[in-house]
View 1 (cartoon, one colour):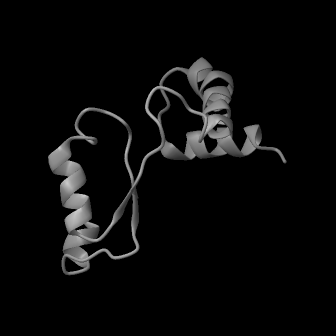
View 2 (cartoon, one colour):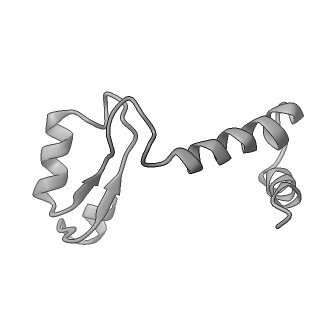
View 3 (cartoon, helix red, strand yellow):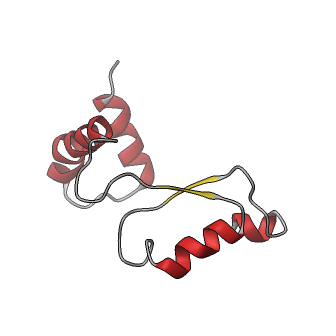
Length: 87
């Protein structure tokens, strides 16, 4: 989408993708390079580069999100998030 909107060049853009098989294929990586973007990937198999974010995401999912079960609206999730992030 960003490539299309920018006319096909993304110099300086840092693209973040998960380490799933679809996002780390050689063709995918080559296409990012063709567009002038840089892949934002750390090492595979550990989370040393984002350990704190992973810890917060895990707490967020465990404390306010999963106990509720299914949420009816985005607004409910937003309010629960605001209550959870009290600082």
